[in-house]
Each structure stands twice: as C-alpha cells, then as structure tokens.
Length: 405
Image 1 (cartoon, rainbow, N blue to C red):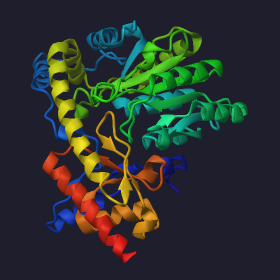
Image 2 (cartoon, rainbow, N blue to C red; image 1 turned 45 degrees about the vertical axis):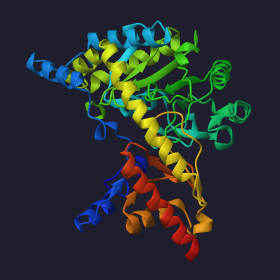
Image 3 (cartoon, rainbow, N blue to C red; image 1 turned 90 degrees about the vertical axis):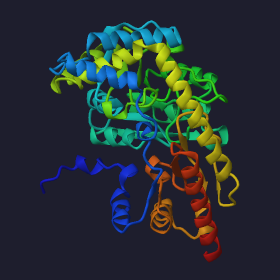
Image 4 (tube, rainbow, N blue to C red; image 1 turned 90 degrees about the horizontal axis):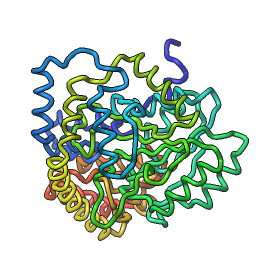
C-alpha cells in the first residue's frame, strides 16, 4: 500500500461536506455556509494592511526571509505583548509560522516520541488531535464543561493528571478564547491550570488566536500575565483579530528562558529553517499592522461590535427553539448548541448536519468533529439577515423532524 499508516489521521471535519455543498450549488441551489471561521470572507481586510502588503511587493520584499521571521515583525509582536499585557518578551523568543496550524504541527513533531502523551480538552479544534496522532502521540482527554459555561474543572483536571502520571504528559493545550464554544476561561481557572502545569512539570500551551475578539460580557486574560518563571508557549497570528486569514501567518512565543523553553525554541528555529520561510511580503505587512496600533484598535473595535451583535442575535434565536440550546458566547464568532438528536430522530450529529444541508442548504460542522457528539458548530460571521434566515431554517428543520420522529 502506498499510503502511510499515519496519514489516516489527516482529515478535516470542518470541510467534509464541501463536496456535497458544491453538488447542491451545481444544481442551482444556494448554500448558506456557516462552517468556516474565516472573518476575511465577511469583513474586508483593512486597507492599511493591504496597502502595506502592496508596498512590500513594490519594495521588492519577495526573497526568502529569516526562517524564524523578519526582525521587524518579531519586534512588533514583542511590542504588542508589552502594550496589551505588560509582558516582557524578547523578539528572539518568537518564531513566525505559516499559520497557527504549522506551529502546532512543529510543536508535536519536536516534543513527541511515539507513544508520548499530551492533554487535550474537549471540545477541541479538530487539528489538535490530528497533529498529535500523526506525530505518534497519544491524547489524554479532559473537558471544558458546558455546565461551567465551558470552563475547566481544575479538580477533575488534577485527578486526570494523577491518573496518567506514568504517561508523563509532555504538554497541555488550552484554547482561550475558545473554538468551538466561543467562551473565555476565567482568570482564577487559568491561575489554577498554570499552577497544575508547573507542579506536575507539564509544558503549558495556550492558543490565543482570538484574544482581541472578546465581547462586552467577558474579560480575557493571557497566560503571559500569569505564567511567570515556568515553561509555557503562546500561539497567535494574523488570521482573526487582524482579519487576514489568507496571509497564513502565525507565531509561537516562548517567553521564559528555562532549559525546556530554550530547547523547544532552538528546535522550532530548525524546523522553520527546514521549510525556509513564511511569506515575506505578508510578514512586512503584518509588522506594519501591529505597529499601527491606533488604526488597528479602531478597525478591530468596529469588527468585534458587529460580530457581537450577530452572535447575540443567533444566540437568542437558537435558545427560542425547543430542540436546541446554546451557552451564550463571550468571544470569537462561534456558537456551539446542543441538539436533541433523539427527539429529532437522528442517530448522530453527522446525520443531522448532512440532512440539514440536503434539505435546507445550510452547512454547519458536526460537534463530534470537535470531540463533542450531539452538538453543532455555527459560525456567526454572516450578516444578520442571512444569519437569521439560516437559524430559522435550522429551527424549522428541527420542528419538522420532531413531528416525524
């Protein structure tokens, strides 16, 4: 067989119904796509960022860049963390990657030997277990609990760590703000997670790509404000708050200078060198976007206000349904409602999402793709009229199937 065994893990449930959606569109049907978290498809990337990209091209910045990232960008990232979180981070402790996905892949490749374990939390971003499993790792699952507004129960987490002590988990990966639930971890919970990671010698990794898309009902805390003097990493990038998904720029921060952090940083640079560099003109454009903080704050404030209104509208509509309920999101642009599948006569959430697409031409993502059977993820980026239409179609679909069940 030509295909490797590890390749069986490479699959993205977010896009699994794209083929069916394309077939429906060929038949002349309009599909409302609420499955992809791509803000640039709904909010134009700010003109000052586009202009900076064009300027970089005109200046001939098209050659390979420093593998770890251009100096101007790493300095701008370090300045951002000081400005926003009063976190002192050296530019040399930053590695620029081709999106956060590449950063996650690099970290797993560097840290894991076959059979090594890491702690993931359900529901998770689907690529977390993908890269873990592809690199020979074994997931240890804990949960974000819906009953706690999708926060982590640190007492249960500690029991899980103790239960798996022999496996010596290499890292623990949290997502804050969260995809797919759209919620934010409480500062007290974060402090307890940091303490557990430190006490049990587990590298803490925090994916903070949505750190500026936070609604008025929440307060975000970066672990850079808490995790002092212990090994930890932060993942972030240009895609969400800077509305530039197609730039494919992420970065890893390793703020501390302990042995684990230094080893990981050095090997991250090696991996970056092995693939030469991320997009050079995109890096210069992102650097200017970071430096232009006044313009950025104006742009992101406007975008977040609109997203909060759209997500709030969708939340109210969903919670009027007898067949779904959702915890009110606090950040990002996702809703993660629980669906009463039994009441509707569906055997699982995959059957639900496929039937919804075929019958109502609304495309969602199944919760089981995020490790949470019985839920669906809805992206709340579409304009209010389209979002209202889509949610009402979902509600009508549920009511029709409830009568038939």
